[in-house]
Length: 509
Image 1 (cartoon, one colour):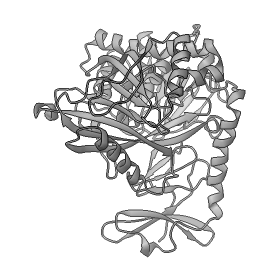
Image 2: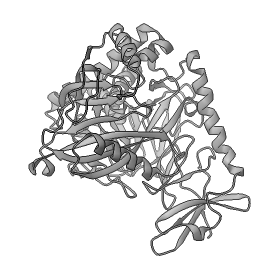
Image 3: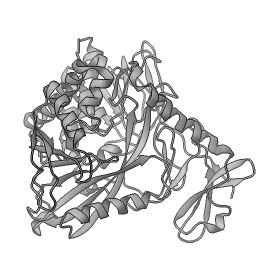
Image 4: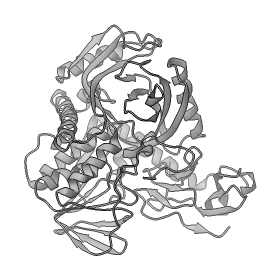
């Protein structure tokens, strides 16, 4: 399975067990069409197939080749955006629903693993939230009180059980989880196909049309269904309504070899902004046979397309890790995209702009559990069953308390559109180093120019075909990234992440 690009490599891409599927080559009729084979799309397919629905899943690239292959795979109901913040935005009852839905998602993963005998290193373990030594502990006390009101199994402890440094007071969340996401996906796809589901890869969907019988178009063919689910991380079917409610952020991760048992097996998170998140990989792979563990550390987040040098963020993350853990060497480096809703919770439910179209987006750092929540919630909505989570995750919900965040996020988009009239990043393409790219102004247009290792130049329009924002060069991944809504293109302008469904326009040099 190959979905990495640029200079980085995700730890999970070492897995070779991913099954291969063919591409769509005819028109198809089905009960439900699902766009995207990340954990959200596959969980929707699985839950509906178990209810005897016929399902067709369409994937633009390879199976789980998007953000599911670039996660750190924490399975947690210790929520990044904090229970005290959910109380402020939604009230105590909704904070409890948020806990119950994420906890149920972890349980559902465990039940599926047991039901189908999936070997994916699933483990239950504790999670610890701590504040850095020079930070106030007030947030921990605030979170403890709110989490207890929500029914979360949490307690205050004197410190997290890390050997390398004293964290000071910490909150211990019991019964969290972790797993190998691609091995889970392998088992899940086997279950889906055994239930009659059909999966097509390398079948990019370019249009979704709602209606009494909605359709999805790919490769010149049409899938017609009773319902279409768009589970593409950033929705490809929506031009503005949903995108105005969330923002794309890049988050970074490294996989480092450390001595066996040097770090107690648990999940760890600090309260910095951006925060750090830590876990161990515990499979019996080649690293561990040499007597080492793999420490997975994530963090150093920033708004996509707004970093001067993405490689610096990986360097900062590595330094933070080396300062606190006995790192032998760093073997993997990668980044992923997190979509942050203005009010903290995922957007899962009906797309009110299109009849019989549903969306799952806004993972907010909890893509694994939000994806499972999507599978269970969208199953119930399509079946017409009541689900107590529906109101909390409704994409059309109104959260007046988050109005300032909506305004701030959309001001970022306006600022990105204003870059049409600013100078380029550099004045001449001759200043671009081999293997790098930059945005250059050429008269009234802006060009995304890439220079290969041999000195040849390749020019593309710097305008994202989704809604017209100006892309920027990401030197860590060697991609062109849109700061507005999350679209990404490889160094030669080929679309690799939506919501854009078209490549950057090629220009004469």
